[in-house]
Amino acid sequence: MANQLDPHHLVALMCYEFRSGQDGSARRLDPRSDLTSGIVGRYGTNVRTRPVMDALAHISVSHPYSQVVAIALQLKPGTKEIRLTIAENQDVGDSLVNHLYNIWGKLQALSDEYAGQRAEAWDGNQRTEELDEDPMLSPEIPLEVGQPLKIEIFRDVYHYCLEKQMKRVKKHRTGVGLGGFEQNLSEAVVALVLALELVFKLPEKQLTDGEWEEVYWQSMTANEEAKLVLADSHGLGCENLARELKGDLPGDPFQLQRALEKLISLPHHIESLFGFAHSPRLRSALQYHMTICAVLGQAQIVKLPTSREKWKSFLEDACDEHNRWQGKDAVKLFQKFGLWERECPVHCECGLIQYLQTKHCDSWDNVPAFSYIGVSKLSCSACRVWIEAFNELGGPKFYSRGSHGKWYWPWGMPMAEGPLKEKMTEKVLDEYITQLEEKGKIKKRAGSDGSGAIPSGAEHKISITRSQSAKARGDAAVQESGGDLRGFLKARVPRLVG
Ligand SMILES: [Zn+2]
Image (cartoon, rainbow, N blue to C red):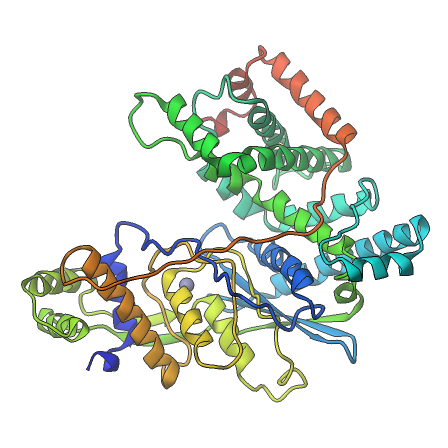
């Protein structure tokens, strides 16, 4: 009986069950993810394509609210073709397609500059053989190659993502009591503020080339300093410091690590793209002819149980037993959803995977996609479970960077019939039952968990001279406003100080 339940109803139920938080699956990555159909046939290299896919998805988001992008990669080495397939929770706009063509073209040019520099610096063939022998070896990224092009890519991405970036800044305003921060953190904040001060002139006023250069260097410096802070005990130092600074003040402690991660996310992802352009192993991808395929948005019409009684019998079927609390939950569920019948959007990662699994009568039909799909945001729990269910069907498997552990409603399932529907029902039901056990609402069974780490390739960096001069301009700016960080923030960007 339980297997006949509509998975949409179960997702709505989970959304009610976890209305006040996460389900504990947050940021879980599949440690067994064996990446297939990548740019080259080697795991060590394909792992390095993961941040590139996420970076492409991240720089595709321009709307300040509720835009999520998923992106897949296919290659035809025979004809040297590459295809990016993009999906959103709705239709994909032309401006995004044009933006990606533009950035891709500039990454191709940057890749050519790096390849030219390598050919000059050493015998390229010999070193490529060395690289093939040692998959952990990555040549260092030369600091000054392609500088004007990098600033141009940075500027184009920043322009495209401006509204979204402004929303991040407003949401994660720097908290109170910044004085006494450790050096890296303080330098990251100063550099960020100097970059944002210029960015705030947009879109009313265009920035000069010199100003863009300053935004670039300060953003990259902020990124470098923030990386050091975040690497420190996984950001725990950050949170402890934020808690200490908060002292007895009312409210939650300022989420410093989260703010920092969000504020440097754009330069961080742009750096991943520079690393991509530099990588000798991934270079073939930027030498192929690239096309973009935009997936149409999809939705499912869903009708939830139409009365308290129907919710109650749904809960009884789900638990396969009768309990007093089911009557109470049924009342609350009916209050929450009422006579709910509406279109539920299919989230972009599920829509993308379904598109890749469907025949479209073109030459890409039998070209398997890279099994890692880039996403601009961690997946919701329903999408995580749907992808897990899809991967258990015995066909191709897909992975993304993980889930934030929250259940969202409305949520629509692509391919709402067949074995995938049954599997989805089974898995959501399983998580619901586990939650009831943990709350002590029904008798307990055993459970399990797992986690994984991501290795990485050569890192893009900026030169010490560049970051020192960016920091020197930061120091001077802090001195000008009295020598302390809080005074500096108040004077320079009162909008940013919470
Ligand atoms: Zn989702």
